[in-house]
Image (cartoon, rainbow, N blue to C red; front, side, top):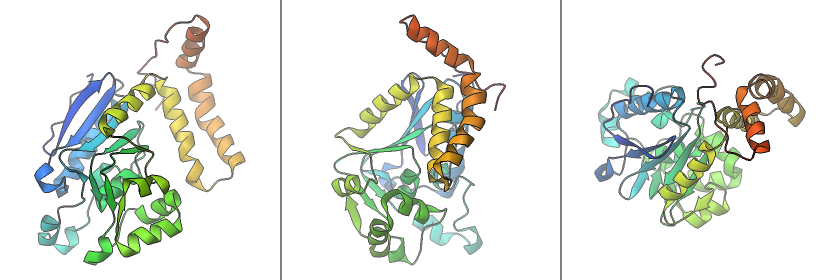
Length: 271
C-alpha cells in the first residue's frame, strides 16, 4: 500500500483481491456492537481507503452471527447525556452519512439491527445471507434513528415498508428484504459474492467509477433529469472523463484488443 495502514481494534483489514479492501468487524461476542471510539477508528479506515489509489472498492462485513447490531447500549447508558449520540460527520461506522470517493459493498452475514442497519442503508450495494435478519427496534427502547436514516430508508424502500419496519420495530427476513429492495442479492456466502462484485468494479477505470457513482448520487437529489444530466456532464464527464488520460487508454485498449492499463492515481492533481 502506498500509505500507512491505520491501526484497528474493532475490525480487521485484509486484501482478498487486488485493490479490494475487506473490513471485518471483530467484536463477535458483542454481536459487533460499536463502542464510541470505534466510529473514529472506522473514519480513519474509510479516509485511508478514499486517499489510497491502490484501493478501489471496500467490502464491509461482520464476524460471527452478526453483521452489526448498533451501538453498545451499556456504554451508551453509562455515558453523560450530552455525550450520547455524538458521532463523526459520517455518522455510524463512519458510513451512514458518508459520500466518499470509493464504493462500499455491505456483505450482511447475519443480524443487522438498529444503527447496524443504518450503516448498510447508505452502502453502495447490499449482499446478504439467507440467514440475515434486519430490524430497527429503536422505538422499543424509547429512541429513534438519527443521521437522516428515516428519509433515506423511505426513499429506498417506500413509506409503507418503512412505516411497517420502524413503527413496529419488527424483524425482516432476507427474502422480504429483497422484495422490498432493501438488499440487492441473497447468496449463501455474501462475503465471497461481495468480493467478486468488488473485483468487477476494480477492473474498470477508477475515474469512470468515481464519476459514475457521483452521477448515481444525483438521482435522489430532487433535481429533474435534465438539470442532473447537465450537472453530471459539466462537473464530472467533461473535466474528468473526456479530458482524462484513462478514457484515451480505455478506448485504445478496446481498439487494440488488450487489457487497459489504468492510471490509478488519476486524481492527484484534480481533486
